[in-house]
Structure formats: C-alpha cells, structure tokens
Length: 177
Image 1: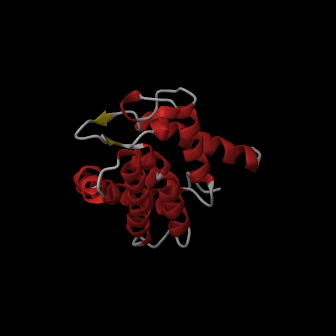
Image 2: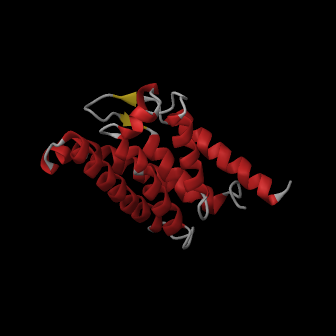
C-alpha cells in the first residue's frame, strides 16, 4: 500500500477514535468529564509530526458541521464559540505538544507524562481564558469550576495513556510509518 494512503487512513482512524470517545460524558459541572483528552493523549503519543493535529482538526470540523461528536453528543459551531469551546480548541496545542515531545524518543517513558502535562496546561490555559472572556467571570471562579475538578481525572488519564502509548510504541509495530 502506498505510504501516503496509509498515512491518510491512520489519520482518519485517529479522527474516528476521537469522534467515538468524545461524546460520552459525565456532567459534573459546566464542563463534563469525557474520554476526549484521553484520546488526545493517546493519539498524540503514537503519531508522528502533525498527524495527530490533523486528526484533531478533522474531528473538530466534523463536529462543527453537525456530527454529534462533542461532549454529550452535541455539535455545531455554537459549541466551539460557546463559553467552553476554548477547551475543544485547546485540544490542538495539547496534541501538538504530546506528539512533538514524545517524538523526541519514543523509548523514553518520562517524555509521555511530561508531554501530556504540558499539553494539558495549554488546553486548560486556552479554555480558561476563553471561558473568562465569554462569561466575564473571574479567573479564580473559572479555575475553580473549569480546571480544579478535572485535575485528578486528567492525571489518571495521563498515567493510563502514557502506559498504553509506551507499550504500543515500544512493543508493537502497529503505528510505525
């Protein structure tokens, strides 16, 4: 199979993975708990270059045009331009950080959680600033409802995604391209 075609198929599979994992959510506050960041971490850690970024962009565009693939099976531009849309947009710098940092050396385990923590920081930063601007709430309030309730869960996602991605990258040849 042509190398370019294989790459396109893998990007489509990763976008599909995001689309399948992201809508399932548990509403605990204005921002629900989803598997989206877990998918972002995993995809970023097993892809090279900008492939994970492209998959995430495809996922966002599919949600914007109407597929119910955002949290709680929502869709449309209103989700992106709404108060919590910055966290969806924050997936882009997050996956880019994960992909670029883990690409340094896929055999160094510490790069996995490090990249995911850095990526999460940028996702939280972009999403929280976006939320503050659109809701006119204080930064303290935004952090208390949009960040603090999610730190423990995201740390668990980082640990599990780091282990799974490390195993995939070092013990299999599934995503070598």
